[in-house]
Image (tube, rainbow, N blue to C red; front, side, top):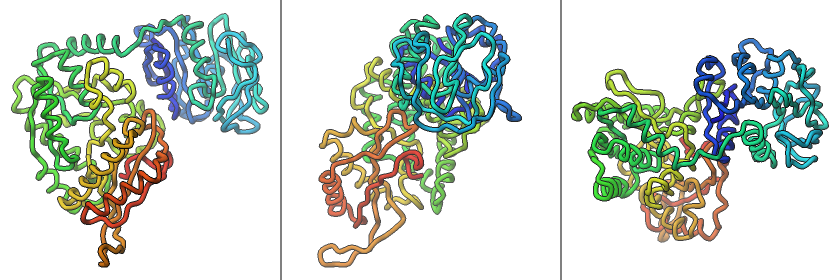
Amino acid sequence: MILIVDFGSQYNQLIARRVREHHVYCQIEPPDLPLEKIRALNPEGIILSGGPASIYESGSPKADPGIFKLGIPVLGICYGLHFMADALGGEVIPANKREYGFAELRILKPEGIFAGVHQDSRCWMSHGDSIGRLPKGFRITATTPSTRVAAAEDPKRRFYGLQFHPEVVHTPEGKRMLGNFLFDVCRCKRSWTMKSFARDTIAEIREEVGDKKVILGLSGGVDSSVAAILLHQAISEQLTCVFVDNGVLRHGEAERVQEVFRSHYRVKLRFVRAGREFLKKLKGVEDPERKRKIIGRTFIDVFDREARKIKGAEFLAQGTLYPDLIESRSVFGGPSAVIKSHHNVGGLPKRMKLRLVEPLKHLFKDEVRLLGKELGLPEEMIWRQPFPGPGLAIRIIGEVTERRLSVLRKCDVIFLEEIRSAGLYRKLWQSFTVLLPVKSVGIMGDQRTYENILALRAVTSDDAMTADWARLPHDLLGKVSNRIINEVRGVNRVVYDISSKPPSTIEWE
């Protein structure tokens, strides 16, 4: 396994993804992780991530410099390189010219992590400080026109540093560089797969849970479905899944979940109709963050009632993923700003007296899909597009009402029908409709109309951390618009969202 020390970089999760793409397990930990815990983890290598701070700033993150005496290979990336240089007696200085974006990389030592890398390559820079003096034993291995020390190494101690970011796609040979570190330097084996993850996680669940009972909030989405089957294989009858119909689900969703899990998988399932309770509390609420919090609190209330009915229940399982944590807050207390709260992140009220089980919390969405395939879930379920916990409530801009929900459900069905018919469903990360609180004038049957505007949203992405708007065929968009306006009473204008993430988010609220 590889230990990734999180210094607050926006690219931390990309480092983890790149390592796992090489079938090597990695774990992200905060910089204040005690040395004894690092020894206990027994990593084959340590990667020090980048970060937004300057090494000499007051309060800048620091790891225990004792990591350099463990005899473990270390790779420092950007700020990680600066920390390494400073800790080992080098000097970090403000760069003469801040470097951000593409840079021409000149490899001086085509060996070590640069083995097999073209002598002239490209890389992605993002830094304001540079190495002024290298520590004793280091040598420069790569340079750019603006940065004398673009890379350095101390091969005797197996310490390596990169001023640029090898984990981003903008560094074309970055994957090879990381692979060289993993296999040539750290001597890792390609042993981490979803098969091994499932085996190890099932064993961990059994050890953690023992003979106690577990409740899982089942939504029918990929994350909770995979978590449910994983738990079912681990503890069988000790698992009870609770499906809460919160009144803001898509058409036919509740019925489908009951059919698949109760009838096909024979999972113990409690079905709770709580739509009226949710909608009552949402009445008159327009602020998106209030909607999320109301739905989250109400969801907990409903779960609390159900938990009291299940004797011996001591655990609540959730399908939390890495991106869920990132969207809500910095994973380990870094500088990331809160964009929006997530409905299943942040723990549980003390009154519930349930401990959390989150078997997927260190996985990305694509890994969850691979795990679902390994567990034998049907393709339809594995490739189901993400659906937010607050449901259609955050796809209705403004107040959520029964009528507006009805309009949005009908529009959503049409859009997804046409997306599937065009063979695009699995090529898109998400495709959905958003009902706007804006009306426009139209003409239907020689009559003036004044109805709602509906937005179509379709994006491509690998993990939801970034996303691009999908270039859907104009004929498809035209057909969807025509069907919605003609078949759904209450909509007379359809628009298409061409915003990417960042700066926009995927969901509108």
